[in-house]
Length: 474
Image (cartoon, rainbow, N blue to C red; front, side, top):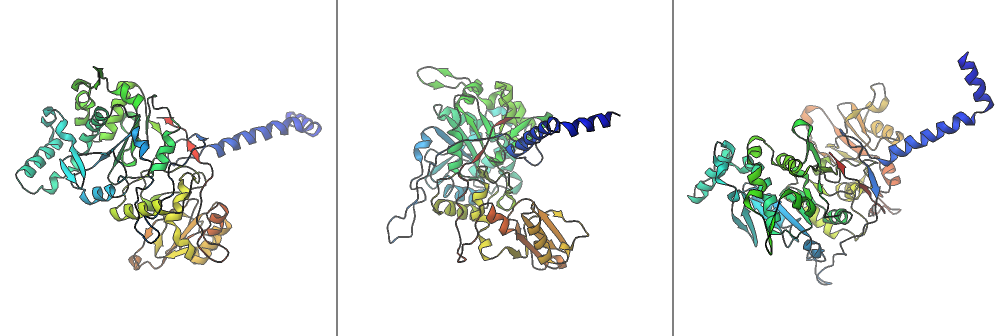
């Protein structure tokens, strides 16, 4: 009876029911478009902001010279307000040298902290562990590696593999934050990165230009720690504001800023770092304990992905990209040269911008043999896509959600993201061919032009306006 009444009312005045339904649909749709989803995490709120480019075009030294000064026109004036700290390990010499000749080569006020005092070219590495109190050596087997390592260097002996500095990494976080603030308390921002972390500096400068340095900011990529607490993963880099430092590390003002030893993090939270295996986690817990401020999550702008794993989706297309992780020295050098010499572009550097570097090979064709682009979702078993690589690619082109595909061992996989992936051994364990492809037609419609009318390579100019992530407290 009730259904008949509702049906009658709907027939007489359908707009009374349809209008609210349409409004509800539009509201839900707008929310789904407004927030790009982070795999394994909650939706990340976003906003639009007009930001300027901080990098003028790079020019050759002379008309007849191909030699370039990669630091030419680098906005070094930004470093008047930004203190950059590079954390290194004595066992990572090649990675550190590559970083100093590329990503951090233009940072004039660079502070390098490690587990051994040394000089690398014209740069000085501070033994940051030497500034810790002697009490760190008490009942601390991991820290004993530093004591043994220092003794071995003093006596000219070879440091054994078991004594390598990976055990010491966690002890560097607290004293390096202390050192950064002690050395440059007037800096508005403190930026921390590691020797295998690549930074896109223009993204950093654009990001910080939107924020108030006097507020207590702790920015980075979230990683879940103990008791459900989140910390900024060191492998993505992280940023602290001056406002945060002032609340985190109490000072005395006697004509100049003075930081008493008892105020330093390495003294106050010594017991924590002895018990916890991750120094980046201890720093986060110390920040929460001392200031009550939690991490402002900015993933995937802060990213710890390797080049092969960088995932570009429709939602991430215009999201700015700041960092990459675990780059090998050769990868770091090649990416740096490409970034500094690519066609001049004032637009923000986003996930889709990186495709011009990682996927330039698409100018030669939409697929690669003996290559795995890390597609993971097999299509249903009853589909003709499993016949061969051609069928797999054709079905991807016909699927509006598919951006790339792979075919191996008679299995076709489709993905709604774009990844580079890596090469596959031609024997493939005796399993036969491995082919990967990308739907270049869809990519072209999204703005990534892979070839022009005459087949020439087209430069991808990127997004006019970036989709900036709004910091989310975690």
